[in-house]
Length: 268
Image (cartoon, rainbow, N blue to C red; front, top):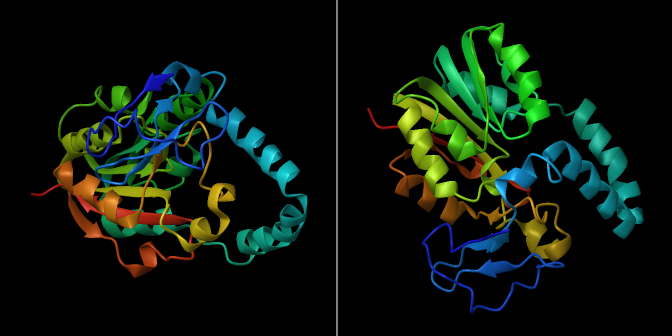
């Protein structure tokens, strides 16, 4: 494990009592200075490529939740099917079309690469992926379009790309896993061209669902979710990295939604 100070303000909270949502050996802390909620004893990057790889941890988490709340799972199943098949909407694709010009783009935490490859032929897809199996799948897809995938953690992978290379960077369902979120945003700033944009999607810890569901909220995933963002502290971290907020309106952070979206821009 890696013992962390607050990733938002660098305050050492080792003497602070563990957050009530902590589970087993995993210690969530609320920063005594800035109130950011984070996992203090985060997993090592190496474990995120092996025992805690996304393709393993997500199915295990679904099984755990289904066992804990079987009735809720049965009630939610038809609602999820309705949303998937009837109310299908790809918000990422819509934001990419709106904010990215044609050219090279980078998806940090790209998984198998399907999400990025489907965005359109005007983009040259690149990626960073910590899972070796998923990185290999993405590399096969991206290489045929002139792109490449770096098998590494987010910060280490971003460091392998040159300054000002990309018209757009995607951090979708990534920053909540990253033990160095501020550093990742700074690297995102560095690799963007002036005027380039960064799309972020993270769980909204400030949502009504979290306040009602508490430690049973879907965004509480220990130990692979290590950062818990509210609209306010997400904005603060983005601005502190040198980026400007280009879009973060009420529809991007609906209180009843479990997720929020923010688009940032590198100043010209």
